[in-house]
Length: 188
Image 1: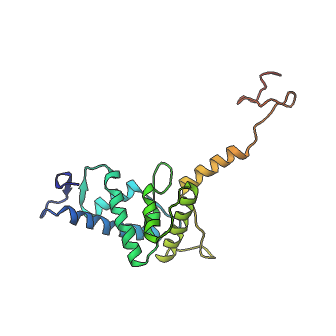
Image 2 (image 1 turned 90 degrees about the vertical axis):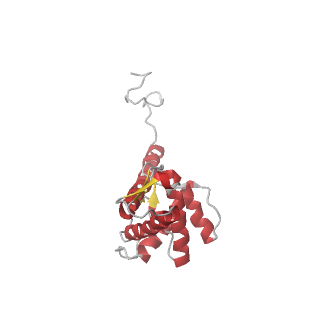
Image 3 (image 1 turned 180 degrees about the horizontal axis):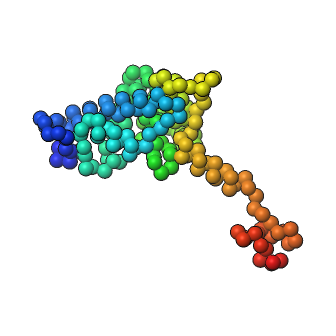
């Protein structure tokens, strides 16, 4: 990121790119601690980016995916250094509710093997989110709460499960699968 791609509101002494990255990472950490104070809460990358820029006053015209990963990478290392759970597990894509590919850095920093299976990675993130809720004082249900997939991802899994578990309807006369109309094409 170059200085020309950034702007600060209001105008003051021009910060260095390093100062901006430091401010973004510190603010991201703070925002994610706030998210962790609500049981089963998550935040999207876009929401996080907006909040980071609003709170720091440092705006960029660079596309989100070109800078948010580096910011969250710094959060991963900071959380590990502080012996906090991986706060970046709270950040999900708005379209599918899953953690991003950068989540592998959480595993690397923790010295864990990479997880290639999507559901396994999402379950790891759910476990990490529960650890965040516990660490940062979310009000938990009796028993201490349970890990949960991000709501949007959980809903997608349930929709798939309904399609798979629901057997197709068949004609009582010829035993052919019925079309969407529910009327057999052969028997009428």
